[in-house]
Length: 254
Length: 114
Image (cartoon, rainbow over all chains, first blue to last red; front, side, top):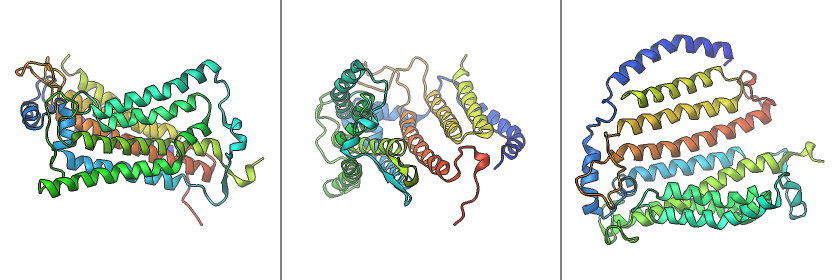
């Protein structure tokens, strides 16, 4: 659509949008005076029923665990779509043998930056693992921790070594990680069907509130999601970086 | 200023939408869409807030303390995941559009042939 057509459409639809926005916002509760009951109930009973102290994770991986299953497969499908869209086309080829490792290093990375960013990799991974495992206790969980975990190998990129990143996180391994995480989450739900006769129902002992092993199967769900998010995001990023750095049209190769 | 979070949400929504409408660059269009989506984060978190409420973490707090609503926070988490995937897919399409048409101006897009 041309820019003029878009502006014209916006000029027509804008006033209608303004009316709908005003009407909609007038119906909202005043800020700070929310009266929803669901959240109140969750805050009140989840500690005694599920022994979890972080209500957001308790909702995500227990009460709404079935919705999270859908959410996880949205992520899975989208990453599959990105990999499909950014595949190597017929008239393209990929550079990047071990021989031209140096050719892909970003210029401008000083020795200090390289050293520091390689040092960052284990620290970021440790933080990610911590956030994934403590989801039921403190703010965190599989989605947040998985993203931090994915940022770990990405620090190798700061060191100016894209191919080092690809060695640290090979494509096939990322695909397996992504699929494994998604499958593990679905299978954990089956565990509920087998041991508690309801799909995605908790079937593990609840533990003592505040301890690392509490909240039943939330920790396992969190790990499954963490694996999938790590794989999914690293896969997406490397697909884009491949496009920018490695994949060239055959005719453009020098 | 009890309406301020809602005003911020409307502002983000309209500013992002305007960016999508007026954009001359597909990457900018995609980023503006993410601005539109971030308005929903502000709106959801604003809706679930209780005055003087604490974060919904029940460790080390007295049982009677007032907590904000965790439901909307879970929805924001879902929202962020969806946004990330949508942005990734759209940017992948932009990469392919640039390969095909040699331009990232939405006005230069043509129907695919062959």
